[in-house]
Amino acid sequence: MPDSDQAVDRGRYRLIPRIIIFLRRGDSYLLIKGSPVKPLWPDLYNGVGGHLDRGEGVLSSASRELLEETGLKADLWLCGTVIVDAGDVGVGLYVFSGEMTGGALRNSAEGISEWMPFDRVASLPAVQDLHPLLARIHRMRRGDVPFAARSFYDAGGNLQLVFET
Image (cartoon, rainbow, N blue to C red):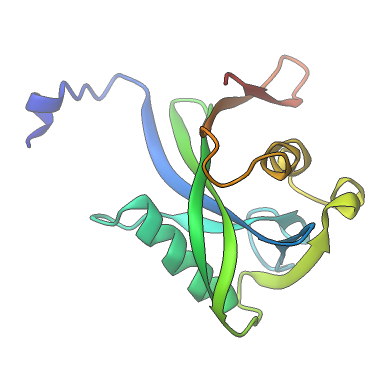
């Protein structure tokens, strides 16, 4: 369908789709400590994730990113979405969780992958929204209604994560 049929207006807010995955094993989650040479979030913990490639669905993108960055396969489910206000362009973040189904854990150029107990996450050097996002996911179970949230920086430059559902 052409842009005109979608009411695409270059002056409107636009979203870049991204995914993030938090595999679960008991009360531990697979996190990745960003490589010190990464331009974005070096040496900080985050979930595994990345960009969607053109023509790729969000679930297939999540599975691909997980395999590329960790060597693992998993049975994934959508936990929710976060609209990240990044100025003129935003990020549409699709948040997944799931359980490992195969593969062998390995590190990648993205960083070091580690299973981290949930009760240690708050004390980690991490991206600003990791703990509140993971706290929400930790309370969820497969089949729960996915959450909707938005993320933005307040006037003081502090990241805010607001769950709408």
